[in-house]
Length: 141
Image (cartoon, rainbow, N blue to C red; front, top):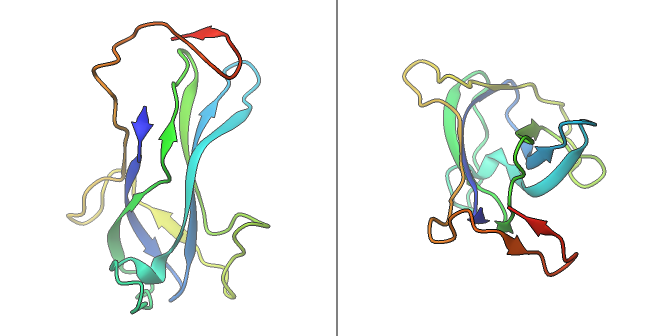
């Protein structure tokens, strides 16, 4: 995968202000250790896209949000799992808002909204060739 992974999230929040820490991780099968691939911190007041005009959230109202994560170049290892982790804070990097919100994620969609999803771009021109990693000189697929 190379590029900007995108997530579509169908959410409901119980407070008028909230932020999200969105992290794409790879999980090691033997130990369960999590390895961060990319992330994004997102203030839900800017969900309309206009950074000059923040909007309070209507508590309990369902909405869909598309967020582009930071650029990443990563090869997911065979047998490892991919995890999309969401939380309203990520201490000490992202402090929670004054009133700790409860964020509800609708994985299968809700009331006519689309299902939450993770979109990863795959470079088809690379295929599954074995390449040499420059940083550690190990072979990987």
